Amino acid sequence: MSPTQKNHLVIALTQVTLITCATPPSFANPTPVEVWRGGDDGLTARFADALEATFRGAHEFLLSSGKAPGTLIVTIPTNLTWQQVGGRTVVNYVVEFSSGTSQLLGRSQGKCPEERLQECAVHVLGDANTIKAKLGR
Image 1 (cartoon, rainbow, N blue to C red):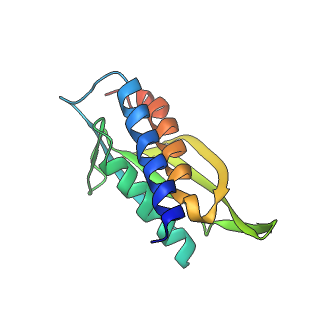
Image 2 (image 1 turned 135 degrees about the vertical axis):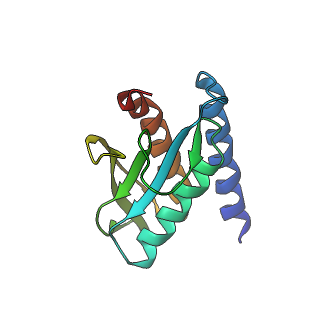
Image 3 (image 1 turned 90 degrees about the vertical axis):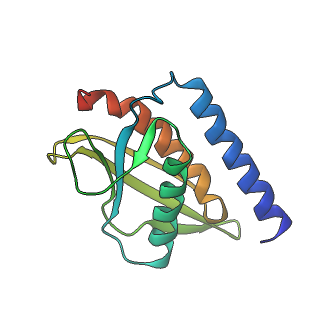
């Protein structure tokens, strides 16, 4: 990992910490979350890994499986798209939030440089914190 990549990772982890600290504590009853992906390319797989790492580090969520009631399902429905901008690859993502009963609760979308996928994941975490209230837990 290059020094620049390490720098970006530290910044992204700091952002996760700040979002986590700014969110009212729900440590006693974290929301179960599952990360799914419909896309099968390497970029989409890396983004799914970044999402899982971000949710794993957030105290208000607990990675789970089994689509149990009260679970927030975070789905990357298709392969991420990208474009070259000034010599960099910029990633465009769309993530859908649904309940364990398959009710669509909302979407998150945005873009970030490919080497900073963690920043996109932090944005999705922020949106998930807003959306989880719709689960009725």
